[in-house]
Image (cartoon, rainbow, N blue to C red; front, side, top):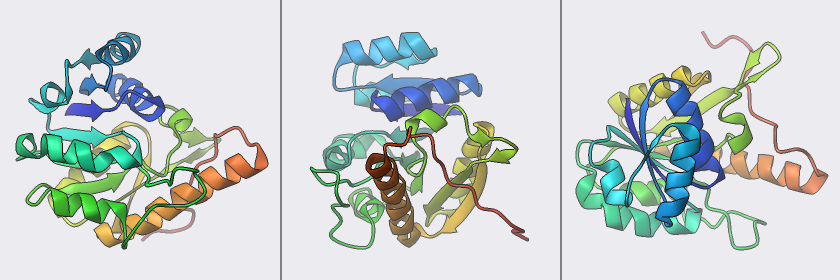
Length: 209
């Protein structure tokens, strides 16, 4: 796949390394072009001069920016996203990281409304950056949950998750993005509150058919 990653922080850089290693063509952008260049050099991705350049030839666009930056990035990129799939990998944490800053069902639903006609899929947000490249714990593959309202877009996202080594699980429509955002917040709170190593992940066990 041709993938654009918007954001070169912990999640963006880890996702860049994982997707390049899986054989995808990756373009990455950041607020600082120097940061994007450094991450691209370290991961084998292409450093784009800006967000618009990153998404120009992409099939899939991953938003890996802080939750409070999503709306601005969406407004900036909206004209260039026609025909592309947007993956919302963000979590709407408040300024003190003590809760989610959500005014409705899910932050991903707000994003979808700001991008009419562009399929938005929630994915990767329940995975810590440190596990994006190591989605296996013992004999278990971590679950790659995803949610969205466009069936074809979700199939593409499931293929991407599988290519990175996750066990993809369709969580349902975009309404279920709220559950995924809460799962991410729970994992964050457990690690912050207990001094854990930020390596825990979700795995759905038991028969699924």
